[in-house]
Length: 632
Ligand code: HEM
Image (cartoon, rainbow, N blue to C red; front, top):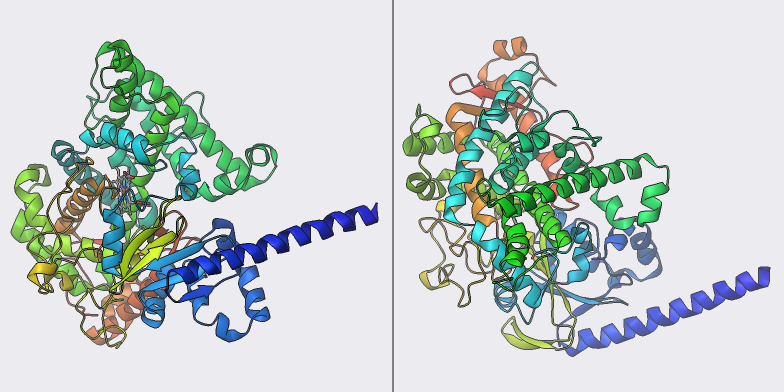
């Protein structure tokens, strides 16, 4: 028996070693063929499991191999390196870093030219679909497919992303920002609230649920409007409706929270192994699945009756393509099956909510840390919208362009630059054909199946693309790691390097205009890619931009946001302090906030994890204690 076990183990080790060595030799030869400098790493660091187990294999690697082989490249192997190391690895090793491992070769790039070239050539550099398995959990969808099938999904979905619906999102964002600030005023203790991350997630979920799906979700204490459809009230309920063990929002929140166990654990184990985290993950998945099945059936009935849903009615449009066209003899030749309809709905909830919430969240934290920027933001809001105007009267068509070109646009852009929700956009060269591309002025050939990481955090700090000034915060020679919204009012590099406004020659649907205002600093192509670029860029970016602008305008027209200081001094103690003491106190709070922000990491998107939060204070304008005079 023992000898059989030893034999099997020995055979396995021999097989594994053979694969390891032959895979590595093969990939080193592929890396060499590009003519680019390359680094050899024993494990593919982009792999999810390798990232989770980095604390084991990286120290072993460092122990077994001489320092000169790992000391530079190890920075690009650690989990969350894109946010933690920023542009530093590219400053050291060049804008393009090629890694050979036993299973892959990967080129990480922070070069605007290379990024622009890759994103413009969709057919030559498709998405590595193997990275997107988790997002197909409820059915394949626009994010998890390529080629003709992707085109079909995009064609069905994109008409809903129009300016009429952007106006609806603008309105919904104002209503929801009101719900959120009222909630903070009701729940603040000693003027402090600690739930900004959770609440911005709720706000963004409520907005996409209403504008995208006609589902009205509200804040505790808010009642549904009289015209709300009784069929959809169950989705807004604060108690689980019949047949469910959690509310609709809890099911989505739980899904997002447990995406990793859902991805990594085989279904059989997840469903039956008695571990609390598995139980929570399974409950969230099952509840969400049931909600969506119910919603689908309801939409099928609506479509058959010819009822149009509210706003974008994404589910209704998806259902219509299949169920309406089936009746009409499939005139468009496009049909999605039920799992694809539910899969696409899932992706809209997911992509449309966590990303935008992070931008809102971090922008508020940064504004509390940068009072001068907050004051300038409020001045711009007063000028554009009026200090005492009623937000219900703000007109989308008239105001949105000016808002985007003001400090509102600048603070949003700067958060997207420094803390982008997606830190690296993955692509690869076609599986069967090598691709040529200009890198550092030399034409290079990338072998078939080369993985590409378009490093968002890197290119958005590349000094070649971003004019910089010395850092006021750290004293560093440049301020590219700092959140400085005023940079968006600096002159652009040069006329001909400006971002192109020329639409794609082929229309892939969705918003085709630029992401930043023409009156501001215009990043060179490939250097500002929070929404990616080219045909496969974010379909929801206009909605996200409009949502953030409207919500920030509502909040900062009426209120200021300060860092909470109650961990160091009571309200009475602050009231007795002189200016110098207040300054020392607020600096402490800013320092703490910056420290917490630095801990953010990517699971699905870049955000705070592990219970980290920054306590804040919402104060009526005119009642500030710090941000009306403090300068960081
Ligand atoms: C600040 C907010 C947002 C950011 C930073 C963002 C970022 C991105 C990025 C980087 C991609 C490309 C991903 C890749 O190639 O792997 C993407 C794609 C996508 N986003 Fe967004 N997104 C945001 C908001 C939204 C919203 C509000 C929606 C929908 C309501 C949305 C829906 C999508 C979809 C459907 C795709 C896939 C498009 C395709 O493959 O054709 N996103 N987004």
